[in-house]
Length: 429
Image (cartoon, rainbow, N blue to C red):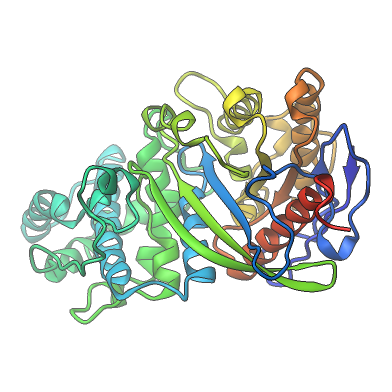
């Protein structure tokens, strides 16, 4: 196989400069110039046309991954980067969802306090927490109401990007009363400790505490205000479980053979829960690219069945690559959450969870190890699959919250694959 893609990140806590991406091909060894991203690829000839007047380049992408790996954050980044930002309706929905994250985080802290033997210290706080439990469901947005929801559109619903308002006034006083309670303060200190861990089965609580809680606590003063409107950062940091299929169209400008080209793209985001994975094959037809997201920061997380969470994600990637319905699609593997990985490596040894790791306990060596692990997996799958002979697979570390890095990675990966496809079909001299 050939290796010819490099992406460089310039802003902390983004990952170190990427090593050359893994690209697998068995029929065409022509190298792509490094300025175009490199790599060999395959895309359906009917969809990929030479960039000449009257012809348009196009690419259909499918976004896949396990739960809580940052996949939907990548999807929101695409909206931000390539669709002129978030609409007013999307910002209003983000406000509702962030407030849901805030209330849910406080309720989770109350559970942690009880596990630590701590009770709320005032009747006012007890009454406030009761009201918050009753109001939580009022601060949930139904994804089927989103204008991008494929399933709702197919059933004649949704499709209108209507602005959404809270069904009830936000309980600012109750939120502040609970947050000020001594037991909640102690629970917050406990969850920030490096040695704190939730029960293995409490995946939802783990996601809340590790991702949603730090952001909503830091920004609570803004979130509770009556005139709060979600910023770009707010829209990217909100946490929700994807239970509907969303699809967006956008145009991406890429550099091919020292010339700027515009590619008409679509991206379909499908949830990673087991029941959502059943939909993956349904939406596989006609896709030129798969973007598979895995979270390197899950290296220390054990699932209820005793399996390492990141190892399970690699197994899911193997299943995707081996599936006949995805056999002709190019694959971009995003090894996500480099920022969280960096923080975790300060307190945990990677070798304690992956005993074949022999490098230094650094972000650089960890990234290289996981990339090489993907390389071996991809080699094993490719060796036994005749259908994979003309598709490219690129493995790239990233941080889904870093807009500059995501833009860099997606543009270079797309340029490499599109250029390779045109070469492969003789459409680019």
